[in-house]
Length: 168
Image (cartoon, rainbow, N blue to C red):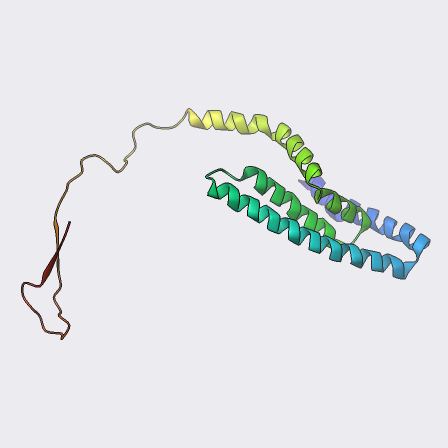
């Protein structure tokens, strides 16, 4: 975790400043700033449209009764892309735009799954062998009864004895 924090808060800003200086020396400071603003705007629009698409996929999966795992992973990548695109810099923008390409996200998801799959399967197998079989569950004997509802106030506010409704 410390490595990722060091990477995010020390290495990435140093790389971005170096790229700002290089690009600025080639195309000028105003054009560099304009390019940074343009990529942030374009990235925001792309993230918004792809985010809406991911939400639709999650809803469709849920409506079919399926777990929307793939769509949620895609949504996570779109969220990370949005964060990268809103972070000023050319390296982060490049990574952010790359994450907006669906085949790139699928390849990345497959690689990450290969890395974490052994741990997920192991922990699932372990936890499934330690369940108890005797639990208090509703069920058992069903008692069929007839209910009587007594309405003690009539429309005029006076009590009327014998004003009952039967429900089955």
